[in-house]
Image 1 (cartoon, rainbow, N blue to C red):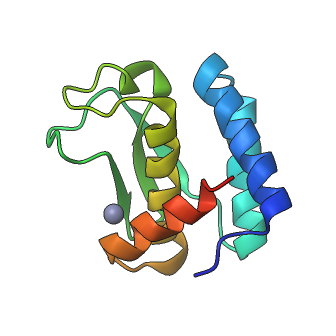
Image 2: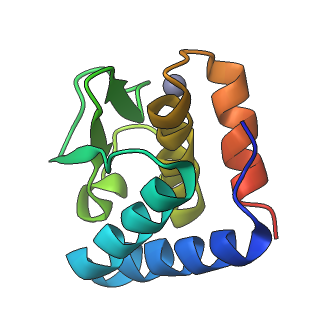
Length: 119
Ligand SMILES: [Zn+2]
């Protein structure tokens, strides 16, 4: 799966950055809406987690278009590092790979996330 065009990535990452800092759901919804529109998918439903039982799991995507993510408020309190904004964003894009492709290929999801975060 190809990452969106650079201009769209910049816009989406900017909205996600603002959401991470200020927790305004309008920013997050706008980012998710742009991704869904670009890939022609239904906007996934997000469940915000304070914690995920398996500390090695950073996010979860279910095949019914549901995604569990750490809310930024709790991301920094994860029991395991890294807990910075960049890794929250990488986790977001990793899960978006699963949402769009329905593949469980972790290496490809990581590669997609890294490409989406390239400057
Ligand atoms: Zn994954």
